Length: 129
Image (cartoon, rainbow, N blue to C red; front, side, top):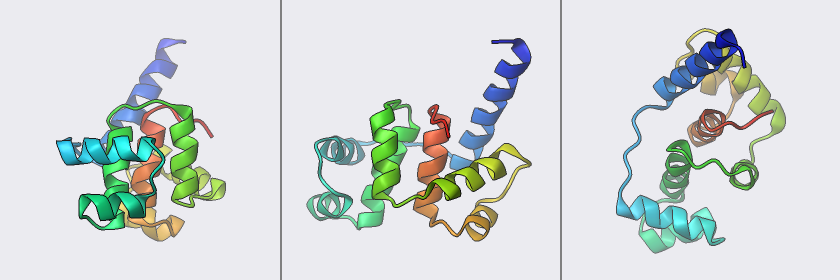
């Protein structure tokens, strides 16, 4: 890989991390992720953990954003959050361009915030279109 391409890819990951923000892990989040790996749905995890389903989604998304690089998880997360390939492509193009605020990403793609976070987490960890 040439130096220019490496620099470009490094900058892209850095920009995506900037949009994603700081990731804090804690036991409840790790337990939710382990449970999701075991096959439970976000609704089941939310009920067990005593949090909203959307919060259970963020717990899993954060753990993936924090460095889990398994292709099968990428596909499962996209499927369970009902993220269409066209939306992934549109978001990818927006993220590769100028710095775009999160609100603009949502308004332009019509994705939910959790879907956007999931897409960014996937791209940060090597997901390829």
